[in-house]
Image (cartoon, rainbow, N blue to C red; front, side, top):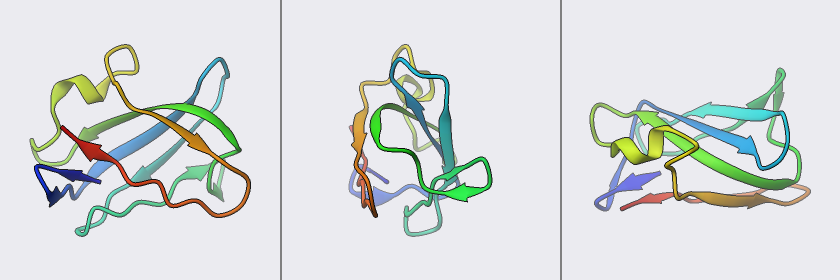
Length: 88
């Protein structure tokens, strides 16, 4: 996860299923990388998600912190995924 080309550390990344009732959450490390966890398992089920990001020491614009205002939509496919997020 990056903002202005720099890694966002210490942010909470949440993938909330579109039209569903589950979410997966992860915390970014100093390099901006994160691993999602769902109910004690790594990853997220395949599907379409709205992504919210909060925290990050003030580097995350407010619009990304709520599902209603976040423009981030991502698709998780079966198997391992690497989903880069760039905040603008």
